[in-house]
Image (cartoon, rainbow, N blue to C red; front, side, top):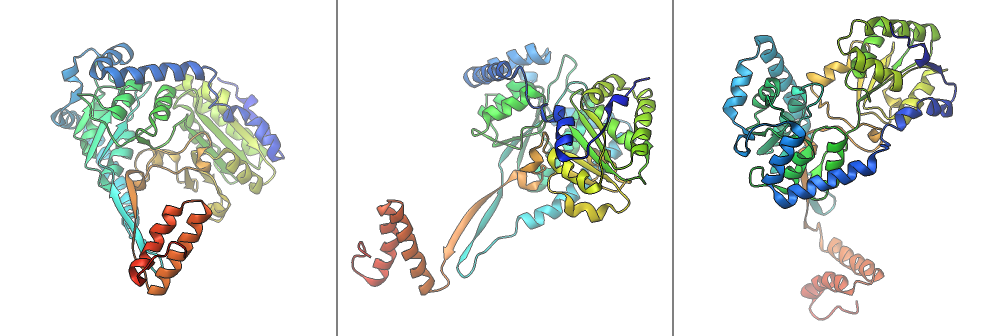
Length: 447
């Protein structure tokens, strides 16, 4: 049995908590960062220069792909057949998740498409979906059909007409669950290619894979760096880091549920972070005991044990107020509230990707089928960024149409001229004043 006693800490102050939790804040500091950036840059440059030739070469070298270039694209029929071959309960679960995700984001879309206006003049926005987006679905230690649904379904609700899926496929091809999720989500174009070379193809285009306007979806550090390097050529959703959960609990919480939720996050990968903040030391001790017991029965025990040993913390703090200060410091991807009155603490939350209110609300629901997308800001980026939603796939064009009155027009013209001349841009001032000239007759250069 694992001994996790060393993961139990006490912190009275914010500074003490910051020091204890410092390994979490350092997760984004890659000691091989320069080497990763150089390698990623070379692969992207090769794909940009050589197109399909480089794409196929890297798919074979890095993905273990054994097919030809003509086989990279997966047909809609293959996706449909993969779906039909799944067990009935899996097909039902995929459909349920798709429907709930769609319903949640339809409500957001209704608000996103409302035209804004200013007063007293008329101004607003044109809201349009992106034309073509790429969805990156990670491979590795597990298959993630949920990532397909949490991105492609949302893009579909936003009205994106062309959705392209890419995912690494070894010698056996894309896992059937991923193909089935593409089918359920309505994806018609998918490719058996992943990694940096897939990001490069989506960003710059090849003969086989047309370029997209935006790339969304999580991946490993190489994929994250590739998205960073192509940003500006295309848009991206975010730079995703390792997953994380932070739980705030009071003495009425269940040690069994707390331990289960901490391990659910830890089993993702060895960099995953799981943090529990409690005000009751006996509860903290009981959770550690539960963690040790539940670990013995967890199929991904090795991964979860390493993750919790490095980035797992059970932290005793003096008050719930201090707990929420620490939570905002961490800015977690997922924040669970195992509290007697959880809703009253929502006002105390500034930074979090997703909040799960009450002990009945497991973070795992959000991963799969509750409704909001599980593609969330990580590594503290919830301080300034938001989850994937319909807005991720929309763009706004501002519109300025008319003045409410002649008096408003003149006020705007003269203020524009003053500010333009303040910045030394006489042409701007004359452009504005020309409207007075056309209305009044004569020159207004000296106005």
